[in-house]
Image 1 (cartoon, each protein chain N blue to C red):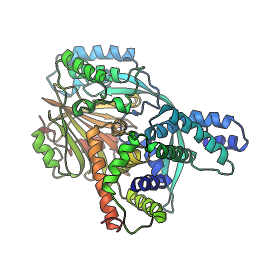
Image 2: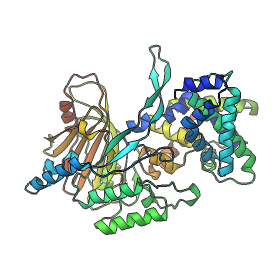
Image 3: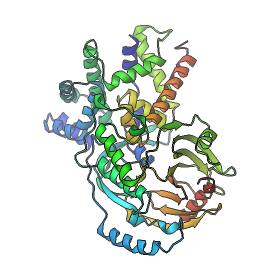
Image 4: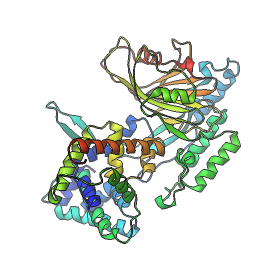
Length: 185
Length: 331
């Protein structure tokens, strides 16, 4: 079903909207959640919370494209749950991804906490624009979608080692970019 | 703190980046199969009956042909399976006149595509091994290995094998057909001659052609992959992106198959390149492929983007493209 029709169902407060959303983006939502969370129950709850989140915000929201909106809600909910679980256990694919990035972005300088996220987000946005298609695809799949290296390799029909090496280089590029921007020394 | 900061900052990146990475057209741009099997359904089927008849016919004639002549390959013979692609929704970036990028939703209808076994000859052990691994790997009851159960072994992982069961299957295929695995992968650090030195071959990309080497890697057995682009002579300035892969015979090839859409849409012909190598050229609206069956290896070139403003015949373009490579330097 077309996204605009799904949104129309939400505007009409028809629960069919949730069914159609599940049908169209359920697998994607589960995947985004599963990449960040390890627990099946957490993933299921995150998926259901995502549908609730969409239900509660459309209307008044009329997001275009719907897919990004839904993914963002799912990711934010999963991250929130991840942080609350972090003290107990950290072993998801997303943990490994954050470990990798932390190595290259050890401590930001010249930014205040409240200001940090916005500045770093903007820097990452600019940095992503400098990457080739492949580098961009690998970086966002790994660090936004939380895909494992093996999953990215399978998507790109290449070896895990190849993806690891490319990602490692891209992280180094990010480090250099942030240094150039004066955010790292 | 830094960890949470990075996580939150990433969470707020622009939508365009998220959509771009969700864009499965990228994968078709790579001319690879959609392998995100957690989200897709698939079915396998054997050769179409008509193709089987054709293959017997061709085989009868192929025995009288000189080794490595181009008619070792028959497209219909080489289609080893079909894959059912589920309908999918993509967000496709489109550049507007004012330089901005807009995203439009496109729905690709589900369809059945033909899977080409690049080894061509169904009687060769390499062809059979590729087919057996493919059928095992794409079986109906396939389940992804949970991350915490993955078995790490670089050599096996390169085949997409992540469980002991997968490893055992690869070993079984090796034993059954008398083949070996590719071995460890090595990565070319931006210098193509490092790759050439490692595998012991000369420059495949002709010096006089306008090649741009982008990336490459090789395996212990001498198999390698090069990604690059070339600007065709007397043509447009539009570079043609490609992937060139060499598979050394006597080994279970990694991914020696391609989704070619509908095999009926293809023209196939033989061509002798300027270095004297007989190659098979395959052309359709959807894809162009060059295949060379050499003494010790199979080389194929997957043309990723042949669109240009040229009015030249696509066949002439493909032949001109093949001429920019020197196959004679590969055994």
